[in-house]
Image 1 (spheres, rainbow, N blue to C red):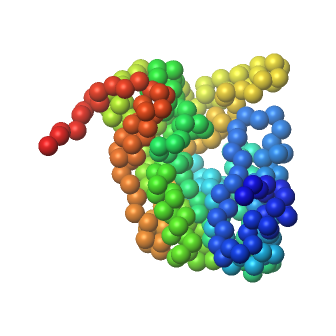
Image 2: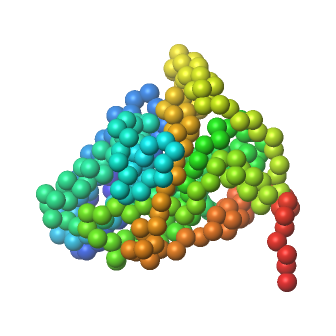
Length: 289
């Protein structure tokens, strides 16, 4: 059925006869001139979903939030219990933070059970946009510089499994961080290169230089009325880095995480099959039996 999170009647019509709803729709964008449509979709749209679920007599909603809502301080490991740093790195982060609060508030008002899942950066076959562009740019020789911060990843299949487990085992009102691997950007690129048979020279930019470059690129883009590829909020997010603890989902939901090597190997195979990167022999090929 076609739907729109800003069309309450369409949501109600789609949900009638359902006991369970997964709300995975959302807008994820950086460097946009006007973030108000993203807030409308993520905040108002998510609230609409919960209220529509109540009117359609849906018992439970599994809400796809984001690990970005944790707001952990730089250099710390974010978890469901992390105190928020008190400021936002990007409009996207703030929109998801506001959306999660709106969803939980609507849940209390309507008595619809809501379980939140908070994925880290989702990677795997099927992903070729967003943060995945950095990996593709590296394999295609277009990535010239990085900020060596920390990142956490979740295999796309594990993310799906986490949603299913949240539906069957999650506690209403609880958040479950989904994060399987944490490593530095340099470590991630080295592993990716070894698996794909690629070794590309990449400079490491200090955070101050990265912010200066982002500021200049953003200013030029606004003058030209273009969307910048790099901007200050993206630079803030990259230089801050993220490390997340996904152990609660293992303890309480029974989620098992895929090793990062397996995730990247499957992803590379998919990229090659899609013609997004050329096929090469891995630097350290696996022995065959």
